[in-house]
Amino acid sequence: MESVSRKRKKLKMALTPSFKGRVSKNYSSGGEEEFWKWIQSVDKTLGLLRSRPRDASTYRVPSKLRAMKHEAYTPQMVSIGPFHQLKDELRAMEELKWIYMLAFVDRVVISVKENTQVGEPGTSESPEMSALCKCSKVILEVEEKARAWYAEDIDLDKHKLVEMLLVDGCFILELFHRCKMINTQKFEDEFLQGPPESRVPFESLAGNFTMVQTLKHDLMLLENQIPYFVLQKLFDLVSSSKTASDGTHPDMSLEDYVFWFFDSVPMLRLNYLKAPINKKDGTYNHILEMLHHVCKVTFVPKLPSKRVPKSWGFTNCATGLFKSGFQIARSYRSIVDVRFIGETLFIPQVTIDKSSDTIFRNLIALEQTSVGAHTVTSYVKLMSTLIRSPEDAKLLEQLDIIVKSDDIDDISTFFKSLCSQVAFVDFCYTDMCNEVKNYGIPFWRWQRVKGYLSMKYVEWKVSIKDLKRDYFKNKWSFLAFLAALLVIVLGILQTFYTVRAYYPPYH
Image (cartoon, rainbow, N blue to C red):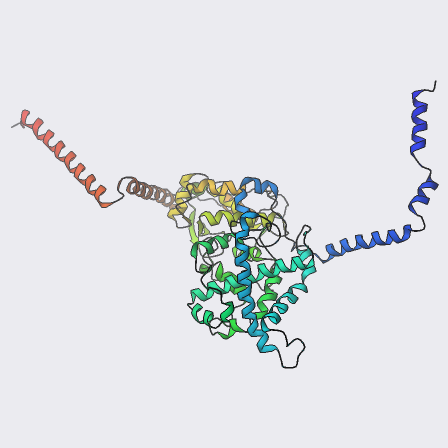
């Protein structure tokens, strides 16, 4: 009887073909043709990667960030781009997107009529068809570049992808245009000049404040973006025609429209910035990247010499710094531009509301998935170390550095929640934090006494404010308080004189 080891050896020899057999199998007469087909498919994949900008790819939000707050990364009304295209709850806006594309094409008709000469090929087509072809061709020219722009494979054929980019791009540009016209009260003239058979009610969406605010939320999401160059290609088709000839804003670029549209977002504070906002080279990846640029337009990040910084924020909180003699003042710069000059910490004003949570989280997600300094991530980390308690938040509110909306309960937990599950790679404020830490103010200096007295004054103001909110909500409650106080005083006086009658004064 053969041993078990000998049987295993025979079985292995039977299953393993000889080297000569493997060569004849893999390199048969038709193998070379199959090999080149395979090489071509591999080369096509590598070509797609070569055409993809290394710093311009758009990724999905990391799963660990999405798990913290799913709704902060998910569109509520409209899907832009391929990531959320098939969601049933967003399909209600699809028809309106096509209606807005129709209105955009009608505006391109003017450009086609002005630039088309008699006798040119294609002049037999209707102006609307010619304008639609013009819009489609400019997107078709950048289809491969747009497909490579997304960091994952897009399961759409060439024409479906072009259609998606065309509809979404036209919708965004028409939304910007209509909101601007409504703001300048030019929409009636614009509406009356359109073709009668294709007029779209001008205020159908752009005139609804609530819907526009929701759309702003959706257009700030990382996963709800299309390439900026697609928007620019479409914008160029109308920038020299009706948009410029109606006499409203002839010099407005696409950047100007975007910055104007998001000007009302409280956190961005566009209307307070003194420095020019537009990027020098004028190149952006998408709308969210433009808003990221706004947040740091006046700030030059200084990364530490070592890769891992020793400190990740202030060693003292806001109240601790104030009591130590440091001054904290409001500045008028971009939101991340925190500076320490002399004994004063200058912090830009930030408005905290529901939209702030969304844009902060998506800007952090953008930095987590792209190359570059993590400025917004560093800012959130810095503020989480500065605001550690409700007292710190109230101090910054009194100093007009933080403006809190009514729907936010506790600012001290706001920045801490943003830091959860975030990978901190670099910290842009290491040098400044070390400078604050090493800056000593003697105990006998007036700044310490002033800081202590200022803190007591702030606490007193907060107490008065809380007292007024809780007990004196209207004038009648205040009058009731005065009446009760008068009764108490009269009662005390009555008791005093009653007791005094039994004990006459000594003569």
